[in-house]
Length: 246
Image (cartoon, rainbow, N blue to C red; front, side, top):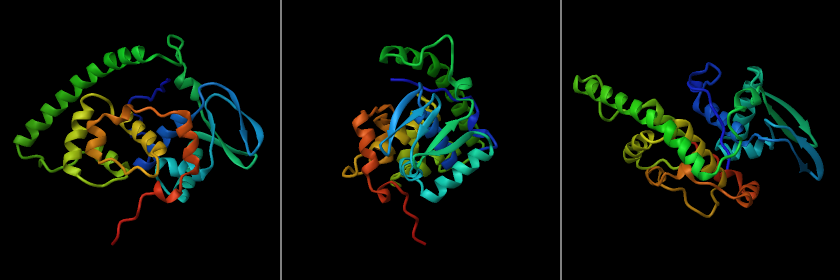
């Protein structure tokens, strides 16, 4: 098991124009190799360096839950902002995340940790987060007493999750479960877990209700390498969001 770092406040960067781009960026960081290796692409050996990964645009779009054309637009946008570099090797994209090691390297920590170490790290980092969130909730409740907000309002934070989640049912209950989840973990951890769920769910399984997924803390779910390999054979239409009927 390994982990990756994100800079505090990264979602407010002018680079990101929408939540699809934020989710795509998280997916890229999570799927970048943490150490150099050689893989086979179309029967040919290809060297993948630290901070690189190689997938087709079709596979990335399917994994993230967007259409292929939108994935192409996101890659061009990230490249324009010098966030990534792209090249084609043996007919497949090789993507390099710029300055990957500069942000991910830490001389005082290792790249991998056992489950106990991760639990200790989570406890030490999430306790201040829970305190901060409780203070923010108290402040919001005071504003609601003054009539500044309605209880039916949905936060921008929750709307980002709701837009990304494939099954659009039980929004009110999902909002409550999301608020409870945010007292325990950050939005980045929830979205990263959602990306993994959308990538590795078998096509014969129905999508969990969003409230069920949140209540069960399924952002912590891990998936085996065999499941990761099998996802390439899944039909694209199962991972693309259906357009709403007008």
